[in-house]
Image (cartoon, rainbow, N blue to C red):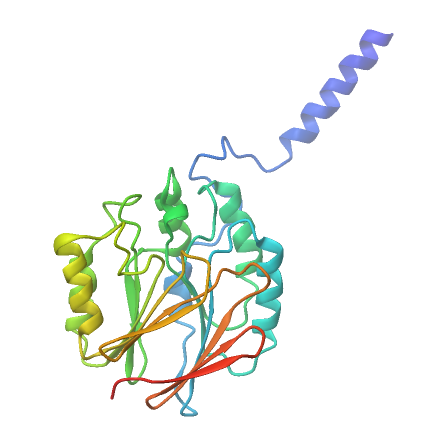
Length: 269
């Protein structure tokens, strides 16, 4: 009798497991969530982002291991009026596990404004590049408003050699007839990562007269610099519910931090 009861219990457990979502391994490129090509789809949601004369971009980065803080930031962005789009500067995962992509999407897709992601070095290990392409699309892309080109660049040179293309970035800047804003994860002046011809290409990108602003994450702290009139802005990691709101009107950029502190920057003409 006891043996029959144990057998019945095993059958019950197996039948319940068979109804649960299944993934073969956290290292695979299989996902539970069904979203695909999100960056491309979000592009179709963009309206006239400069209709009222002010461009408003919400920025967050390095959400890995900080999903509760990310939830808070998403909530605050959704309560901010007139955000034209949201940019995530990479490292949305810690180890590129598929369940990390799933967990990120649980919060990310609840943003009201159009939202775009650039790949980080943590997102590009293992099956990460395959997962990123599946969920978001190409890791190098751009879209435009009436007066600006917004470029999202894959700077994970060590983790994704195939997707890393400084020449693509330079061409995307030089071919533009509009002012340029660049979103990337690793700072283009990172001397530990970029040297020689690559470093020179990035200097040419930064110094191009059309390049107004280059944003990066990666180093987890806020930093603002200037190079030959180009603003170089490093966003802080999302820990502590940190994020930035950028308001651009003409040549004036107002950088508003999560605590309300703001800094005004004059951009190139």
